[in-house]
Image 1 (cartoon, helix red, strand yellow):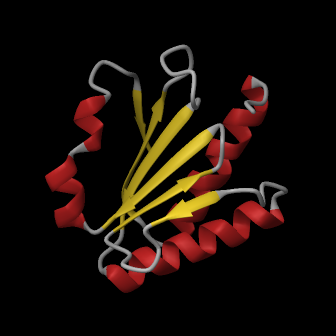
Image 2 (cartoon, rainbow, N blue to C red; image 1 turned 120 degrees about the vertical axis):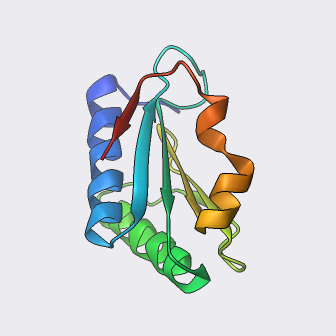
Length: 117
């Protein structure tokens, strides 16, 4: 269930700040408001290794829970090549750099306004 615009923006800001604090690389936030019925923002970031990607995901899930967004769905945490965290209004993709460049999700949303963190 999607919340209001202010709630979506606050959640997106929490995600970006947490990833930035944990030294995620190449953080990109794509505003999909009005373009997707599923989510308002997609945040894509890279970790330097599987261990870093796993730590980013773990810390982000903890921050989301502490921020009152504990009902998130997570895929890919065990391998930590590509971790998907669905927080409802914000969907987060965390990659190792070579996996990110292979899938190139940013290209899927060409034309959507991008904001780099």
